[in-house]
Image 1 (cartoon, rainbow, N blue to C red):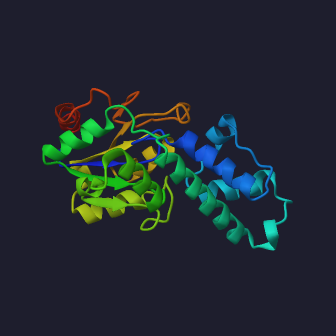
Image 2 (image 1 turned 90 degrees about the vertical axis):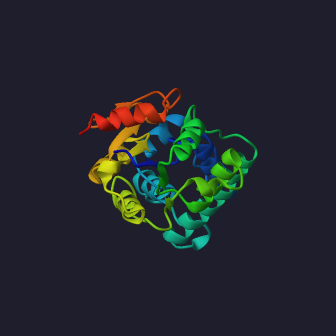
Length: 237
């Protein structure tokens, strides 16, 4: 029997990646770097989970000879860039530039009314989650979610299943009683490694990913209701 829904955040609850990309570029410019991540490059970088990890990967793969800005260590420079990027992203969310994807809010509200437990399993930062959901759902958004696991509690990035395994443990539920919702190949691999059946809703940034093993691949969650999810889940047994 279906008892819980577990949601990724970036790309799944909201198509956040354009705002993230713009925020990265703003942070680079503020720090005096000539780095510009266009859509094609950022699409490739999304194969790397985690903002700091993307910066480090880009630095190492394309700018290996570049000296640290202001003479800081690499880790300190990356941390500073990511902090500036996070602030720039939060500003964009507050300005209403990021909206929940179709069907997301309706499904969360109806699942909550139906008595399903809801959880967030993401490796993005807590401030990014709070900024998005406070804007989209109001100040009481946390009341909808039984468990929230994020980069502060699950530091090993997807496709490692740490965040999902910890979510299941804290919920006290087996994977067989839950459905996960993701938008990327790394997210799907993480969820499947935790034995979770997974519904995928790709974005333009992840449309080229492979989603072998997904329960369903849908354009979005518009029109998806609890009864349909229960039916898909029942067909697994």
